[in-house]
Image (cartoon, rainbow, N blue to C red; front, side):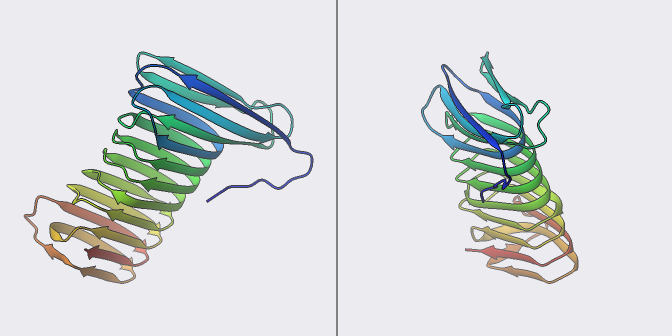
Length: 228
């Protein structure tokens, strides 16, 4: 998903930065645009960004100290301000992202993920750390997930998550939208309910005393849990 701003007279800017040493946690604040995070070298990291604006170029403040990489965005007095940020991190880094509007993409990290998006979309690939993500309006999509615990929720949007290893605890919820969950075949404690929609489970054995739990809550929409 790519978010584009179409308007006359917009200005553009770009920049980059590199970070040396260990990065235990990357904390990113971005109001509007995209954040794409990719696992890369074992130490250090790099950032590249481009922006669209109508008055003054947004300022990205990048600081790194004691294993904490912090990225803050100041849009100044722009009425239009969108920043597309690409970040390469060590695979073991933890990540915290807070966005008002746009797309969050994360690939290949084994550290914990904590992400919040107002409106837009969240796409996660090949993660193996604990995940907590939330979005008010938009979809959450996950593929190749190996995270032991995974929580994804919000108000409106679909949840489509595929696990390549059996999770210990999965919690997915939406008020308006569908939930499609794929997990390895096995025994799970399944707690799933929709007030207005269908509920389908295939390929999983349900046991209220099972160690691995699946929790899904939907107000209006369908739920599908598939074991493969």
